[in-house]
Length: 444
Image 1: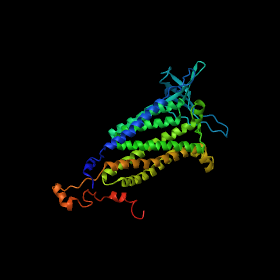
Image 2 (image 1 turned 120 degrees about the vertical axis):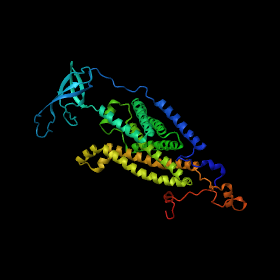
Image 3 (image 1 turned 45 degrees about the horizontal axis):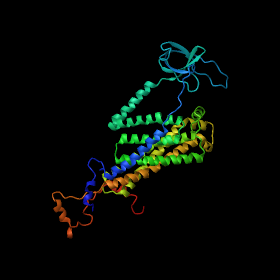
Image 4 (image 1 turned 135 degrees about the vertical axis):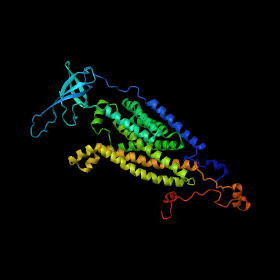
């Protein structure tokens, strides 16, 4: 029987859990230290002398232009063993930016592997090279700003149209994420700070702002924050151990090689660890928010469920979620690595050599460590959410319409005590009961 003093814990209408004083205290105990530690960490790691690109007076610069005419010609023959030439000829471009804006220049059609395919009327980006008082131009790429702005507008419109106010807050969270990445994480790493420390602090800042901005200040969000922080710590430790055991240097492709040459003070192995931590955050907050919200909804739908039932039901949902997320991670990395996979396949590289190469091993470690962090996030977040929900929701006492206390007294036995089990309202049988009790059924 529930004591009379616990009647105020009944779940409120509208599908929301009541907020206990203990829940508010838990929110403050977790939120305040996390915010303070994150702020102090950002102050200590804030970039103060990040290198800036120096614009050389005689170096190449980028200008914009529009193609007004093309004059293609037949390409000259090449030796039999060489690759035949393509896209020979010239084109006329009217410059739309730079010191020579408005003038028309003539340059060769872009050719070679990866060269852009251009047509009359295309807006292009040109490389202007000053050479002994004269300037030569070559088409480098297409202009894409207008198309990307239109795509971004469609992206934002779709999110706001479906998510409404929640969509607006999600876009604001996305802006915060880009801001922290561009103005803190990247400059701090270039300034020589520890990439792992910068990544952990930056990820914590992103997570704290985005989760509360998107989902509001509530015990459900706080549980997701706690689960994400714990899982991020586990991921960072596992990433450090894995990269050391597998002997990864973080230098595996042309980009990392170039960065090593131009920014020698950057710790490339630490940069790899930072990438694993930041990459894991995007999926971690999805899993933790889902688990926390799932427990809340289960508790609201079934007020009589205690910690064990809530944890068991939400964990089974988490298993299904993790199974689909793992496939998503593998497919994402496979899609990004298709050119590399084709190159290895064309060269008849043995599978063992392919998987143990620096570049592929790096992605395997990234996938494995990130997945282990996700798996750890499910039980951690689910246990915290189930504990909080089990304390917040209690079954309501049974009432008899029109009977009041007299109706209750009619059911009381000798001495005024109600028979065992009749002082509480029993939840009606529903499909959730079979689902929740599935793992505890005899024979399992």
